[in-house]
Length: 54
Image 1 (cartoon, rainbow, N blue to C red):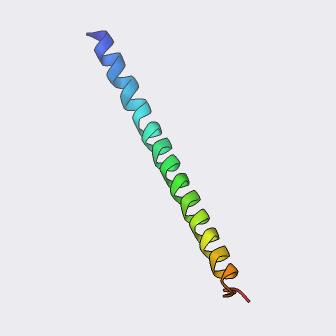
Image 2: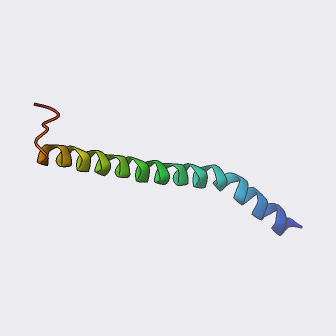
């Protein structure tokens, strides 16, 4: 019985950290994808003769 309680308390202690790390990883991937998409769109517009920022 002590093993089950120890395992449960270990999971309860570390689950918020693991969920936070997973959320940070997914947010980082989303930001990276958004940056490269915007960068690609900027260069595509620039190559077609439209200069978005001057």
